[in-house]
Length: 259
Figure 1 (cartoon, rainbow, N blue to C red):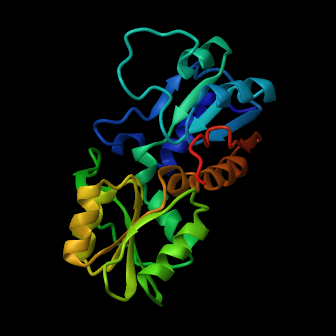
Figure 2: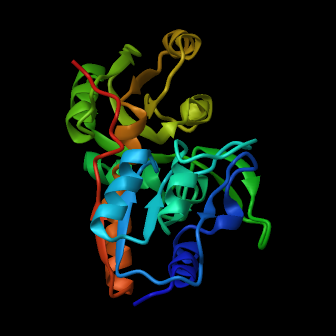
């Protein structure tokens, strides 16, 4: 039965926590690293429903993408997932921007889900690995069969099971796409300069859509949850290969619905 610190150490090899963005709080946010667990619950977010499911299933660890404690907190009670987890003896490890920026990151997973050819190019570099100085950033560039903006939008909506999709037609045929998991529209101009005719990401603001229209870039907002929850099967596979622990993917954190 693995200790939570052993699981943390393994996750650190897949997505080094030292490379998380400065605003982030990835790592062991809640719980006792010396505790052990037979079961791990995997979620995008450690919501109260997720914590309750972990307790019901006997999972002493929740591994999430977004950290259970993100912003500074001035008080805690069990209406907050972090305190709720601690009260139930459940630990929480978040792999957020560390996994976004990993050698095989969430944007690379987007490329695989779409069935495109990964070019091995990171379109947006914004920091350096503090240990070896190598570039760290976001996004993945991919080649795709030539298609129209609408065809790419429909493909993305289906591939990510998006609750809703918003998009701007760049007015050009597409054979090179940049993917940026979650809220990653900042990659757009760099991706444009590297030859992409389209970007697939999430949480796009109106001014960014307008800028995409101006420069002739197809920009697709396929949903934050949808472009990041694809990481959970990858984490499940890796953790089950490495540890004698059952990994369970929950959907209790999918709270945003579409019509």
